[in-house]
Length: 603
Image (tube, rainbow, N blue to C red; front, top):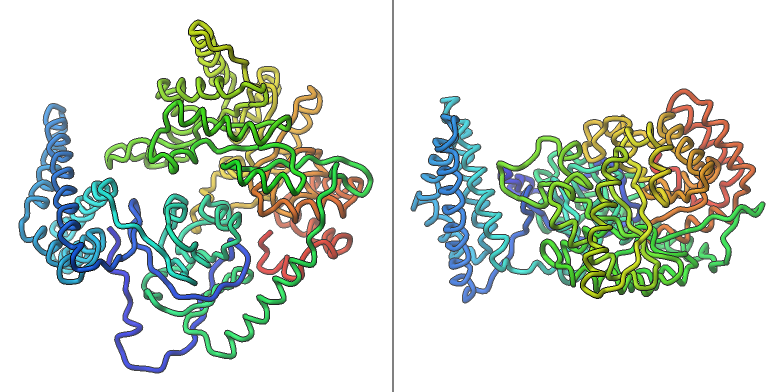
């Protein structure tokens, strides 16, 4: 559990003064609104004010969560008692004593009733009070007991999550502020969407901020101690161009930003171009744009822009829709509907790309480094029953022979062959039961450096390649893309990244195998000329990026893009690559980019 986050800015009597906090822009735009502080790390929640008549049912929900948490701890203590570990059972028994503390439970229940708030918020407030007491103790041994309080509170929060938590409905012009922001939290909000996001942690390629850009929600991250500097109800301006959060803005500042926002909207609308077919550069090089889409209605909108097919359907999005592993029929219906709207331009389904932490939420099963752990195809092969369900659903949905499947986190041939064998066994089983099916095309997601070194062998094994630039950069540079402490080392234009993309495109071209580039690079106007110059002919992107990318492709010459690619392939550092690319944009293509495009060096 996080410590109490409300600061002391409002405790003194003073005239509010405009305050500016500098962070990093991760989604463009300008927003005005009031802050809502989001709390929790593993389970995120707001304060919800309840009618007094609903507090009794909230107490029942809380008591049910306590019973579930107690049951889990008893099972853990029992399991540990049979092992050689001496401390294991003692730790869980100590936590059981905390749960059995009638004073703790009484305080939480009193908070629900007296404050008329949700159980999560009451738990947070009481736990913070206990944690503060432990922090104040002189004994180091006793001070460290706060960790047990945090762990117990986290366990109760997990139990509360499945007990019909009150729905969070945002009011108009709500701006969410948090230490960390999870995509599932944003996707699960009801009512109006937030007009902006503010966070302490997260990076440009964080899934949360990819979602923000797709939804045109301005966002700023990298704000240290953000929940100490902001309170629910604060008026702020979020400047998603320059990475600024302005607290209690003056009337003059507000008017200045309103004029700036109006100019930006007018400029964006005036630059929209009607889609053309085919999409080509000035000198005739065709580039195919595909859409990253999770719903038929999303792709239908993208199709009006001239895209050709769904280049990436993230099947793990079904987890949020169905609150856990979707059944075979639920998957079949989702795939069938997407395949129907994609038609001859094809649907490419990425098999579940989740980590063990999303599958098993027990504290003891969390991995220290999830990016290098049991995730992607590794998790699918470790839990083959669920993979077989997904493969059957894909086979059944492929009635028009227009579905391909993409296997994530491939490191070599073994995983591809194992998945292919399982797919073939499911095909045989379905046919024995009288269901005629067609095999989908099989592709590999190239994002692990090991795959680069055996790319020739992989290309012999698959029908196409998806190049996932986000994870590829992360793994090549050994940089956590969501960790702002190493954000300066996450360099999209690092020479190794450029060389890796070029090598995959070259190898695939020699074997006449399609390569679809996915990730933030493919949807960024700044990077697109580089990718085209390196030889990319298929890009898959979020729908919000399509028109901007189309404009760039129509306005550049392939010959110029190829020259740029050749120059940057000679560069020795990421700074050299960026300088060369920026110089080319300014000298040849400045008219294709908005005036604020290079502000803050975010592309």
